[in-house]
Length: 223
Image (cartoon, rainbow, N blue to C red):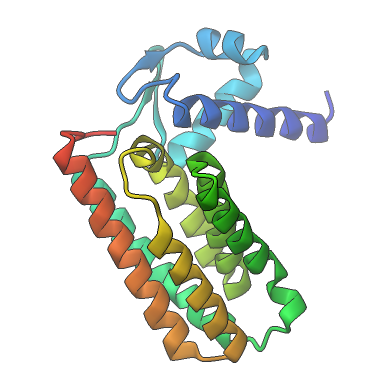
Protein backbone atom coordinates (compact mmCIF):
# COMPACT_ATOMS: atom_id res chain seq x y z
CA UNK A 1 0.00 0.00 0.00
CA UNK A 2 1.41 3.42 -0.97
CA UNK A 3 2.22 5.99 1.68
CA UNK A 4 -0.19 8.44 0.05
CA UNK A 5 -3.04 5.94 0.19
CA UNK A 6 -2.28 5.17 3.84
CA UNK A 7 -2.43 8.88 4.69
CA UNK A 8 -5.71 9.17 2.79
CA UNK A 9 -7.26 6.29 4.71
CA UNK A 10 -6.07 7.72 8.03
CA UNK A 11 -7.61 11.09 7.11
CA UNK A 12 -10.87 9.33 6.26
CA UNK A 13 -10.79 7.50 9.59
CA UNK A 14 -10.13 10.76 11.47
CA UNK A 15 -13.05 12.49 9.77
CA UNK A 16 -15.33 9.51 10.37
CA UNK A 17 -14.48 9.26 14.06
CA UNK A 18 -14.93 13.00 14.54
CA UNK A 19 -18.38 12.80 12.98
CA UNK A 20 -19.36 9.94 15.30
CA UNK A 21 -18.09 11.87 18.33
CA UNK A 22 -19.67 15.21 17.43
CA UNK A 23 -23.01 13.59 16.58
CA UNK A 24 -23.05 11.84 19.95
CA UNK A 25 -23.01 8.33 18.46
CA UNK A 26 -19.78 7.86 20.38
CA UNK A 27 -20.88 9.37 23.67
CA UNK A 28 -18.57 11.12 26.10
CA UNK A 29 -17.23 8.63 28.63
CA UNK A 30 -17.98 5.57 26.48
CA UNK A 31 -15.42 2.85 25.72
CA UNK A 32 -14.84 1.24 22.33
CA UNK A 33 -12.57 -1.42 20.86
CA UNK A 34 -10.60 -0.73 17.70
CA UNK A 35 -12.39 -3.61 15.99
CA UNK A 36 -15.77 -2.01 16.74
CA UNK A 37 -14.66 1.38 15.42
CA UNK A 38 -13.17 -0.18 12.31
CA UNK A 39 -16.42 -2.03 11.65
CA UNK A 40 -18.47 1.15 12.08
CA UNK A 41 -16.28 2.94 9.55
CA UNK A 42 -16.00 -0.02 7.19
CA UNK A 43 -12.21 0.12 7.38
CA UNK A 44 -9.27 -1.97 8.51
CA UNK A 45 -7.84 -1.49 11.98
CA UNK A 46 -4.55 0.11 10.89
CA UNK A 47 -5.87 3.52 9.74
CA UNK A 48 -8.33 3.53 12.64
CA UNK A 49 -5.49 2.96 15.11
CA UNK A 50 -3.49 5.79 13.55
CA UNK A 51 -6.58 8.02 13.62
CA UNK A 52 -7.20 7.37 17.32
CA UNK A 53 -3.62 8.37 18.13
CA UNK A 54 -4.10 11.63 16.23
CA UNK A 55 -7.39 12.35 17.99
CA UNK A 56 -5.83 11.56 21.36
CA UNK A 57 -3.39 14.39 20.70
CA UNK A 58 -6.37 16.67 20.04
CA UNK A 59 -7.96 15.79 23.37
CA UNK A 60 -11.00 14.01 21.93
CA UNK A 61 -10.27 10.51 23.21
CA UNK A 62 -7.86 8.43 25.24
CA UNK A 63 -6.07 5.40 23.80
CA UNK A 64 -5.78 2.69 26.42
CA UNK A 65 -3.41 -0.20 25.61
CA UNK A 66 -5.29 -3.50 25.18
CA UNK A 67 -8.54 -1.79 26.26
CA UNK A 68 -9.45 0.24 23.19
CA UNK A 69 -10.33 3.92 23.43
CA UNK A 70 -12.41 6.07 25.76
CA UNK A 71 -14.25 9.11 24.40
CA UNK A 72 -13.28 12.02 26.62
CA UNK A 73 -15.73 14.47 28.13
CA UNK A 74 -15.27 18.15 28.94
CA UNK A 75 -16.42 19.76 32.16
CA UNK A 76 -17.99 23.19 32.34
CA UNK A 77 -14.69 24.45 33.76
CA UNK A 78 -12.85 22.95 30.77
CA UNK A 79 -15.25 24.72 28.42
CA UNK A 80 -14.75 28.03 30.19
CA UNK A 81 -10.96 27.77 29.90
CA UNK A 82 -11.11 26.82 26.22
CA UNK A 83 -13.47 29.68 25.40
CA UNK A 84 -11.19 32.09 27.24
CA UNK A 85 -8.32 31.08 24.94
CA UNK A 86 -10.52 31.11 21.82
CA UNK A 87 -11.63 34.63 22.68
CA UNK A 88 -8.06 35.91 22.85
CA UNK A 89 -6.74 34.02 19.82
CA UNK A 90 -9.64 34.86 17.51
CA UNK A 91 -9.55 38.50 18.58
CA UNK A 92 -5.84 38.55 17.72
CA UNK A 93 -6.75 37.12 14.31
CA UNK A 94 -9.35 39.86 13.87
CA UNK A 95 -6.78 42.55 14.62
CA UNK A 96 -4.25 41.00 12.22
CA UNK A 97 -6.89 40.68 9.49
CA UNK A 98 -7.74 44.37 9.86
CA UNK A 99 -4.05 45.26 9.62
CA UNK A 100 -3.52 43.20 6.46
CA UNK A 101 -5.18 45.67 4.11
CA UNK A 102 -7.40 43.12 2.40
CA UNK A 103 -9.38 44.15 -0.66
CA UNK A 104 -13.14 43.58 -0.81
CA UNK A 105 -12.63 40.46 -2.94
CA UNK A 106 -10.38 38.98 -0.24
CA UNK A 107 -13.22 39.26 2.28
CA UNK A 108 -15.87 37.63 0.09
CA UNK A 109 -15.88 34.38 2.08
CA UNK A 110 -16.58 36.31 5.28
CA UNK A 111 -19.40 38.22 3.61
CA UNK A 112 -20.86 35.05 2.09
CA UNK A 113 -20.84 33.39 5.50
CA UNK A 114 -22.71 36.33 7.02
CA UNK A 115 -25.26 36.27 4.19
CA UNK A 116 -25.75 32.54 4.77
CA UNK A 117 -26.20 33.11 8.50
CA UNK A 118 -28.81 35.78 7.87
CA UNK A 119 -30.69 33.56 5.42
CA UNK A 120 -30.61 30.67 7.89
CA UNK A 121 -31.82 32.93 10.68
CA UNK A 122 -34.74 34.21 8.59
CA UNK A 123 -35.75 30.58 8.02
CA UNK A 124 -35.01 29.62 11.65
CA UNK A 125 -32.69 26.91 10.35
CA UNK A 126 -30.31 26.63 13.28
CA UNK A 127 -28.15 23.90 11.81
CA UNK A 128 -27.54 25.90 8.62
CA UNK A 129 -26.77 28.92 10.78
CA UNK A 130 -24.25 26.92 12.81
CA UNK A 131 -22.47 25.73 9.66
CA UNK A 132 -22.25 29.27 8.30
CA UNK A 133 -21.09 30.56 11.68
CA UNK A 134 -18.31 27.98 11.72
CA UNK A 135 -17.34 28.99 8.17
CA UNK A 136 -17.09 32.62 9.30
CA UNK A 137 -14.86 31.90 12.28
CA UNK A 138 -12.64 29.53 10.30
CA UNK A 139 -12.15 32.12 7.56
CA UNK A 140 -11.51 34.88 10.12
CA UNK A 141 -8.69 32.89 11.71
CA UNK A 142 -7.25 32.09 8.27
CA UNK A 143 -7.24 35.77 7.34
CA UNK A 144 -5.31 36.47 10.54
CA UNK A 145 -2.39 34.76 8.84
CA UNK A 146 -0.77 33.13 11.88
CA UNK A 147 -0.30 29.41 11.21
CA UNK A 148 0.06 28.52 14.89
CA UNK A 149 -3.14 30.32 15.83
CA UNK A 150 -4.91 28.49 12.99
CA UNK A 151 -3.72 25.12 14.32
CA UNK A 152 -4.52 25.82 17.98
CA UNK A 153 -7.97 27.24 17.26
CA UNK A 154 -8.84 24.25 15.03
CA UNK A 155 -7.90 21.89 17.86
CA UNK A 156 -9.98 23.75 20.44
CA UNK A 157 -12.94 24.07 18.08
CA UNK A 158 -13.00 20.30 17.71
CA UNK A 159 -13.12 19.93 21.48
CA UNK A 160 -16.07 22.30 21.99
CA UNK A 161 -18.11 21.39 18.91
CA UNK A 162 -20.14 18.82 20.84
CA UNK A 163 -21.18 21.44 23.44
CA UNK A 164 -22.18 23.88 20.73
CA UNK A 165 -24.31 21.19 19.13
CA UNK A 166 -25.98 20.35 22.45
CA UNK A 167 -26.92 23.98 23.11
CA UNK A 168 -27.93 24.91 19.57
CA UNK A 169 -31.66 24.41 20.19
CA UNK A 170 -31.81 25.77 23.73
CA UNK A 171 -30.12 29.09 23.04
CA UNK A 172 -31.99 32.20 21.84
CA UNK A 173 -32.05 32.84 18.11
CA UNK A 174 -28.59 34.28 17.36
CA UNK A 175 -29.69 37.65 15.98
CA UNK A 176 -27.07 39.59 17.96
CA UNK A 177 -24.38 37.20 16.74
CA UNK A 178 -25.15 38.09 13.13
CA UNK A 179 -24.98 41.81 13.94
CA UNK A 180 -21.57 41.28 15.58
CA UNK A 181 -20.23 39.46 12.53
CA UNK A 182 -21.35 42.26 10.22
CA UNK A 183 -19.75 44.87 12.49
CA UNK A 184 -16.51 42.90 12.50
CA UNK A 185 -16.48 42.66 8.71
CA UNK A 186 -16.95 46.44 8.51
CA UNK A 187 -14.04 47.03 10.92
CA UNK A 188 -11.74 44.71 8.96
CA UNK A 189 -12.75 46.34 5.67
CA UNK A 190 -11.94 49.76 7.15
CA UNK A 191 -8.58 48.55 8.47
CA UNK A 192 -9.56 49.52 12.02
CA UNK A 193 -7.46 47.11 14.07
CA UNK A 194 -8.57 48.16 17.54
CA UNK A 195 -12.25 48.18 16.63
CA UNK A 196 -11.94 44.75 15.02
CA UNK A 197 -10.30 43.41 18.20
CA UNK A 198 -12.89 45.05 20.46
CA UNK A 199 -15.94 43.92 18.46
CA UNK A 200 -14.79 40.30 18.28
CA UNK A 201 -13.56 40.15 21.86
CA UNK A 202 -16.96 41.29 23.12
CA UNK A 203 -18.71 38.88 20.76
CA UNK A 204 -16.67 35.90 21.92
CA UNK A 205 -16.93 36.88 25.59
CA UNK A 206 -20.72 37.08 25.32
CA UNK A 207 -20.84 33.70 23.57
CA UNK A 208 -18.70 32.22 26.31
CA UNK A 209 -20.97 33.54 29.07
CA UNK A 210 -24.10 32.32 27.29
CA UNK A 211 -22.75 28.82 26.65
CA UNK A 212 -21.53 28.32 30.21
CA UNK A 213 -24.84 29.63 31.60
CA UNK A 214 -26.83 27.24 29.38
CA UNK A 215 -24.73 24.24 30.39
CA UNK A 216 -25.15 25.07 34.07
CA UNK A 217 -28.87 25.83 33.79
CA UNK A 218 -29.61 22.50 32.10
CA UNK A 219 -27.35 20.48 34.39
CA UNK A 220 -24.91 19.55 31.64
CA UNK A 221 -21.85 19.27 33.84
CA UNK A 222 -19.94 17.24 31.28
CA UNK A 223 -20.25 17.11 27.50
